[in-house]
Image 1 (cartoon, rainbow, N blue to C red):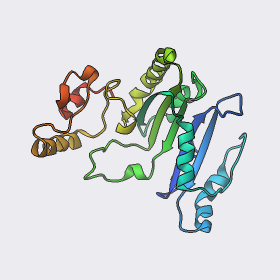
Image 2: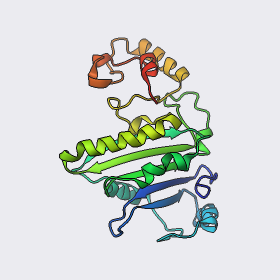
Image 3: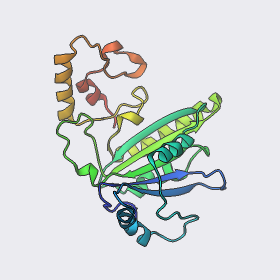
Length: 238
């Protein structure tokens, strides 16, 4: 964490992924540093702190390899194979939390080889002011879990495992990212109370007939209207 969490600037994306490589007999943590620069020299300079301070004990190392958005999308597609069953969960971990301790089991105690966990070092972007952005929950530490399996008979095992791991993380979380969440599985906060109220004011003004549905709560009890932000916030369990 001391290696990947320092501020590398807005142009560099840092992610640690817990994966089980197909050619290895154990789960590994893969740290990826991707920087967007105008020249190759600038890119090498941006990644120099990571290359110079990397810890010992790695199985494999790739230094300053060129990539492209097309290649990054291809790698992501390979990590999310078609014809499988998925559960995704996530959390913004509080800045003051002991992040390695909070995420240790999620990163090391997987129930199948295709699943993966990831950690994004969000600083310095997480320190931005977001005056006009509804999705306003943020911290320096973003965490997500992706359970991936093939057989429907394994649904309960995978669902129980991800619920157990998230139960350990949630007490240390600020909220979550909407895109990796299932409204009907777990209610959490995607925006601050102030932004939630503003969003509802906009909705009441421009969509009084609820043409655009609200939150889909458990079993769709609220129908097409969904829950209001206030109701959702009261029922949230982070």
